[in-house]
Length: 54
Image (cartoon, rainbow, N blue to C red):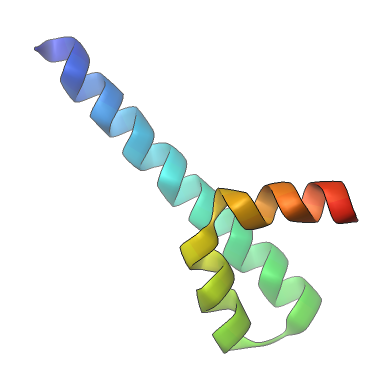
């Protein structure tokens, strides 16, 4: 059971990191709170898209 807790904590940390990266990248590119929120919701998908596209 301890392993399951560690996995959940790691996944939550990865989602948080992805959201923070997406919001930061979005803000630096668009300077828009609305886009930053939208990209934060898509988190890692936007980060990967940005890495490939730019």
